[in-house]
Length: 348
Image (cartoon, rainbow, N blue to C red):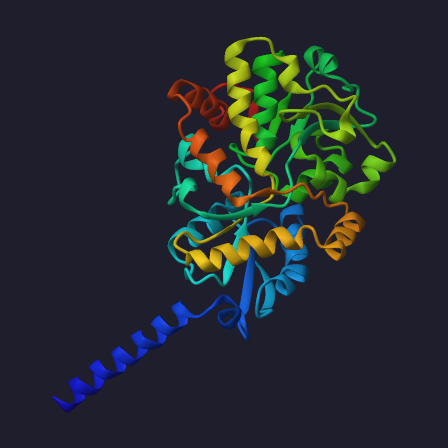
């Protein structure tokens, strides 16, 4: 009985300590702690670059100034990280993560493998909006959308549901282009394949990522820009056609609206759902302050990382609205994501 009593007393002590910790003011809670920022995509990509940028600056804006570290948990464009954050990660305010902007909507458009509801994440905010582009090598005969409607060329892509597979399929169906989508490349491998001439371009790659990973392609005009994928033109791309303006059918425009909507939250950071509200408020405030910090902005400019933030509350509202999309539109978009809408996609 004494052992049972001692065990019960120990449990009570642990629970009491946990209660005290949860009741701690944020400045006391974070002092001496380690705050982890996870990236769900490759260590060398733009998403991880944003995570490292935040790692270096957000800590000074969190009361108590915790040590801040960045870790990579790569897999399926961030789906692995999203599932982990939602179901496994401690809900203590000591972690947040970034994954592909489309992942929060995956339970609606491509639910296989998803174990979360995007509306229920505790979104911190997005560091920038996202605009994707379709481009070819400078020496390619395909320099415009009109060229791509006349002649077929291979373009590199990752997985079947990746943006670089979905966007050329949509262009083939909606605009009559003749892209042959070669799937199976790793993200960075596609750029190497373009350099080697294995494929002639890529459609559905982030403009900010392109400027970060291959700045010489942009500065030295080593590529032709055929189209951009977004709600509105990017300031850098005023002379590049917007796909939304090229389509004419109402059903095409509705499908594109669903695809492009998540680009408004192009670099999204989230904490696990169930994070204590006071700590969530602290993290959101620190995130917003960091993105206004002159030191962060100067570093972002040097790295070619765009800063155009929206709040966590705005991300939540975007997803709440998108989860109500009519099924027929979702089904049509999912057809492009699975390859059923276009038979010109093959595996490498």
